[in-house]
Image (cartoon, rainbow, N blue to C red; front, side):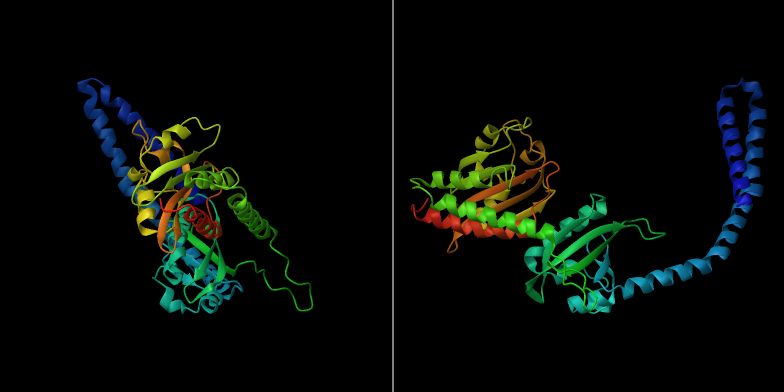
Length: 376
């Protein structure tokens, strides 16, 4: 430690002398040879003294700590492999670097087979994009995330994936550690002890979704709806505020017609009128939903033009500060009746897979109500 501090002081002195030499470049021409001789002397000092000193310090540090480092790494690897919970270490592209024994049993995938392959490839297809997006967000430093996914081998069993970032020693990039658990399950209790403690947060979120489903059903069944636009507006008002900051309803499929736009009252950057004036056919996300009939869930949308531009030419997603979105086609028997697009903005939590599934169920109810009023 003393040698390291002494080397640091010597290096700091050298840096100060170099700064003085730089300042001496403005001396009269006749005095420049003296400055040049001094610079050459300093370079010789680095080559003959500082560099060999640095090599000695590096060699001493490596010899003194390599054995301890190896033992520490072996200990950490052993702990990782013997953890009773299923964990995997991935990169930002979800490529598996390590899979512990519990994760091997949980997923049914051998560790040797999983290594080098994206973990998203072992999930059900609807969950892959959201899992990749959340993993990338964690790797970027946007904070820990948790979402519900389904393994391809057991699609009926929901799995809670909890993601957190960590920086392995000596590596330049952030890795992502994922913990896999059956949704709603807790760590096993000791024999003879009390049963599992309920996950109150998950229960609360589930109850909120059930309340939303009930409110939507009540709104669709209460009172006569004379027009399809009235049905869409009624559904949009149920979703606005409690479920999404922005709700945009477009009627039809081949010919899209915007009927309802509901947004935050305090939104200054973009107004509801800006979205009402949009042509839905100029919104790639809406057009794709109307043609393909599949729900799109995006967290931190990458394409700023996915929902088109406003009258000023600015991307709507950027002006509205959209952090997550759901674009849901209203489909009945394969026919698209319309499209609902939901935005969440600012610090609000992103849409989850469970919320997307609940919205998919509500979309079928809305489509059924629309079909009672005839074709668009």
